[in-house]
Every structure is written in C-alpha cells, then in structure tokens.
Amino acid sequence: MKKVFMGVLLTGLIFIVGCNEDFDYENEEVAAIVRGEEITIGELRFLYPDKKALDNLDGTIKATLAIQEAKKMDLDVSEEMKEIEGANVYPEEANNSETAKNIRQFAHTQAAKFGMEPEEYYKEYTEKTREISFYVVGYIEEMIGEADDKAFTEQANKLLDDLVEENRDEINIRIQ
Image (cartoon, rainbow, N blue to C red; front, side, top):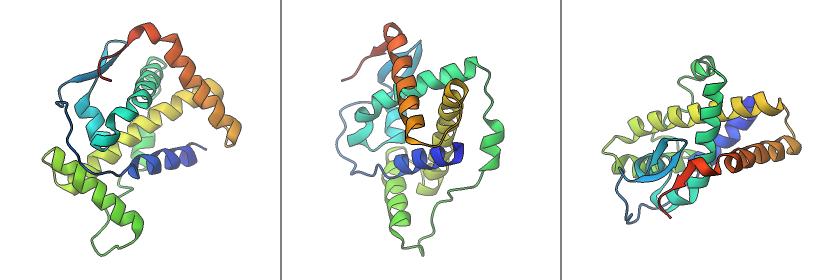
C-alpha cells in the first residue's frame, strides 16, 4: 500500500507543471510558521511552479505537521529511502514520451530559478519529495493502519485535517 500511495503522491507532485511567471516574493520570506518551524517561499518554489506555490501552502502545512509528528514517534524512513535510491532518474533527451517531456520541462523551469542544472534539480527534488512522502505515509499508517481503498484515503485526509485543526493556534500563515 505504501508504494502505491507514494507513487500517486510523487506523480502528482511531478505533474504540477506550469510556466515560470513573475513572483512577487523573495525566497527568504516566511510563508508560514508551523509549531515554530518556518516554511519559506523558497521551499515552496523548490517544490512547485511559482504560479502554484502559494496554492500548495495548506498541503505543505499538513505535511510539515505530519513530519513533525512522525519524528516525535521516532519513525525512521532511512531504510525506505535507501530502497528506492536512484529511482526516477532524469529522463534522457532521446526519451520522447509525454512523461519524460513533462519531467524535463518541469526540471528545466525549476532549476533555472535556483541556478541549478535540470538533472541536479530533479535529483534533489525527487529526494526531497520522497522523504516528505515517506514521513507523511509513515505517520498516517501509524495512526490508522494500512489499507488500499477509498476509505483509507478519506481517513488519511481526515487525519491530516484534524491535525491542522488541533494545531491551529501554532500555525501562523504570513503570506496570502
């Protein structure tokens, strides 16, 4: 189940492809503070196209809370990270599939914002999104168990929504 959920989560992150448009925030600006942990514009911009970055702030807050909870539970994702090390390699130029084209376009646009090569960006991006995914899924499975049906997704979403509600006083959204 974890691999299916991870695949869906990563695929969703990869295909949030958009144009790089003017963005009125500096990378160092704090978008939100979650239990004392800052989420910066730069962190959002690293994960999402500029025009989608702020739209994904709520999801990033949920993920941050879940990661904090997972770490409090001493969940270790290092083994899972090792198991898939090297997966999702940057697609070669000769690969003309839509998926490969979308990945290259996304990586090229994102890498330019951070002065990186697309291959370097994509490697760092996949490592970061995998780590986030493993922690979030680990937390969810610790709390509600494993399942692979629609009810699991609904329970997972409710769990994360409840986590946000329980911590509402410790979430400070600074950018709208």
